Amino acid sequence: MNITIVLFMILSIAFQVVGIALVPTTNGFANPTATLLSLASFCLGVFFMARISQAGVNLSFFIPLLAAGIPMASIAVGILLYGEPASMAKIGTLLTACTLIGVANIL
Image (cartoon, rainbow, N blue to C red; front, side, top):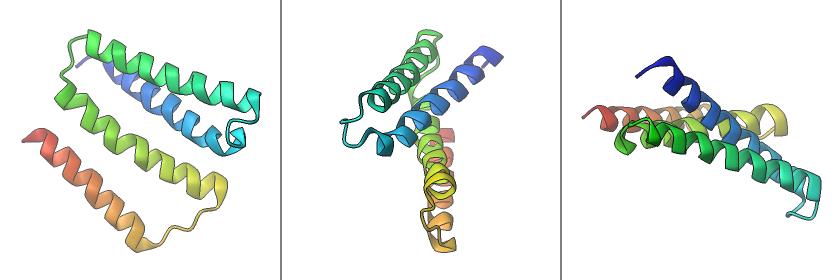
């Protein structure tokens, strides 16, 4: 795996998390500016996923990484930007789930 693939993974996660973070500002897609920004962010995230796939990285490798990274980053956004509650049990459960996804990917 080269630096370009790592960068594409980071960009894919980042754009998808931005898209998720913008969803509450869309007002149920009634706010056209926020809606377009959210959809554009999601599209860019999927674009980088396609580039990762095109580079020959196995789906069984990068999809679990993204499947763990995107929810974790989204939870951080919810906690930090939207003031959502985060108990230690919730954070511990999520970290355990992400760890299990990573271990399953190695096996």
